[in-house]
Amino acid sequence: MADFPRLRLSVLDTVPVWRGSAAAESLRNTLDLAAHVERLGYERYWVAEHHSTPSLATSAPAVLAGRIAAATRTIRVGSGAVLLPNHAPLVVAEQFGVLEALHPGRIDLGIGRASGADPAAAERLRGYGPAGDDFTERLAELESYFGPGREKAAVRAVPTPAGRPPVWLVGSSPQSAAFAGSRGLPYVYAHQTRPGLGRRSLAAYREAFRPSVHLEHPYAAVAATAVVAEDDERAAYLARAFVLGRIVMRTSDWFTLLPTAEEVARHSFGPAEKAFLRERIDAQLVGGPEQVRGRLAALVEETGADEVMALSMIGDHGARLRSYELLRAALDELRAAGAGGADAAVLPSGSLK
Image (cartoon, rainbow, N blue to C red; front, side, top):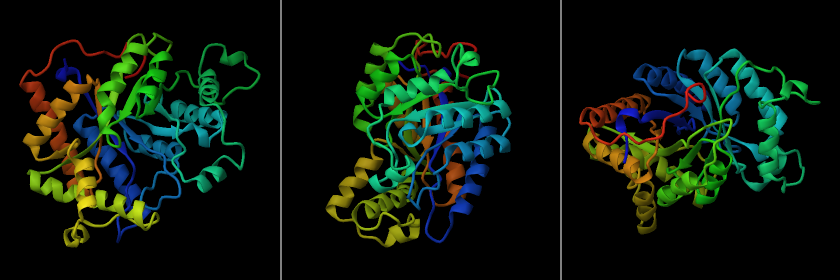
């Protein structure tokens, strides 16, 4: 049973770039949004990693996370996720070691198994090296730079901060969830891209979980699209723009920027497009306050998530800020109603905040 009083609410950001705008404006909006949700009491702010995708300005999560951490004071900041196939583990350890040294106790290191790029870009990211590197070995190497005995290792990640940034695994399948559990890592399930497997994945995570230096007990988050407006109709209107952008990227122009809501209003969705629209909206936190309150409760009840990471893809920056306000209000109302029980997992003291 869900424990809403202890449920954490966080942000996942892909820094969307909309037609008529530019990446620089989207990045400035990210900094403004981070400060805004910090004031609202959100737990953490993560940025994704994408490459060769003009509509998503998140090619360098470590750089962006550093700027966000400098622009905020208390919210945890991290990657959702650094895609390890693209990077030497030592480079990632040193980047996040710098971040942890500058912002002690506020940095998270989310790791993913994909490349976040098409094959040509992925090849260049890894310097034309082999594509078959073993993820398990790369992750073990990365963890070793923060683990016991690191001060005596032949190769060290410098600087060596006093603390260690918590390592998370981000995935979208029961297999990735079980892998995270077997290593005792906190896990984030990507409900926003694959909503059908959330319950199975988090169940697999908890079944496979083994205590580790990271966690004594399992801890799982669910990332979901969140577009919350004053009523259901307005929210659906705002959500359609990103979905249409994904349709165009998949079918005709990968390098397009995302359409505005006004462009979407003029677009006639065909049957296949309507089906894709429903697939991308119906299972997510999209709607007015009452509908989203119910969907949030259902998502947490279904998965048993300890935390929800909200991804709001809204072209109007003011509406995006408002979406996070309304989502936080929805959680507050669930808490006030006394929904849920008291058996959700709790992060151990001194581990993840």
